[in-house]
Image (cartoon, rainbow over all chains, first blue to last red; front, side, top):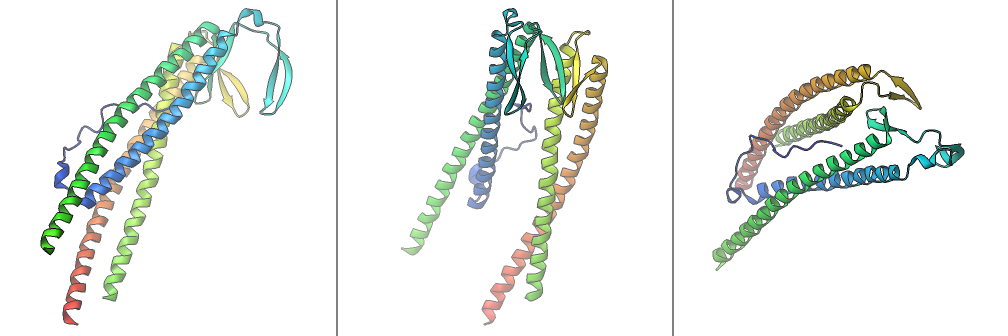
Length: 161
Length: 125
C-alpha cells in the first residue's frame, strides 16, 4: 500500500523525441514499458486490497447485536476449526498495519473500511492517470521510431538507385 | 589487440557490477518507502482513535495489549528512523549512479578505440 505522488520529478527535462536516434528511442520505450508494467502490477494489488476492505465492510453489515450467543467456527489454522460462540457483538479488532491492532466499535469499524476503500480508489485513479500519460508518451515514441525507420529505408533506396 | 579486449572485458564487468549494486540499493529504497507509507498510515489511524481505545500489538502469534501513547511514540520513532535510512539510501543511489555513468563513459570510449583499431587493422591487411 504505497502513496503515489501525482507530481513526478520536478527537474524533468523536455526532450524533443525527433532529436534522438533509434537506439535511444528504443531504450526509452523499454523504460516506459517497464514503468507501465509496474503500474499494472500496482493496480492489481490495489484492486485486491480494495476487494478485501469491501468484503470486511460488508461482513460488518451482517454483524448485528442479534448475532450474540450464536455459534461460529473459529479457524485455528487455514484448515482446522473449533466451535465458538460470539460473546461481543459491539466491538471488533482491526489490523491497522505494521502489526498493530485496534479495537473499534462496529460503527467506527464500518467507517474505517469505508475510508480505506475511498483511499485505495483514489490511489488507483492516480495510477490510472499516470498510466494514461505514460502510454501516450509511449505511442509518441513508437510513432517517431517508425518515422525514423521509414526515413532510413528511403535514404537507403535513394542511395541505391 | 588482446590487451584491448582484456581492458574492454574488465570494464564491462565493472559496469555490470555497478549496475547490480545500484539495483540492490534501489530495491531497498522501494522497501523503505513502502514501510514509511505503512507507518504513516498507521500513525494517522492511531491519531484517529479515542484516548481510551484498546490497542494491541502482535508479537509472533499473540496479541499484546499496548498503551495508545506508547504505540504512537513507537510508530513516530519508526517513521523517524526510516526517514533517516531513506536519506542515507538516496545518497548511496546518487553516488552509485555517478559511478555507473563514469563506467559507461569509459566503456564507450574503449569501444570507439576498439573500432578504430579494427579499422586500422583491416586497412593494413
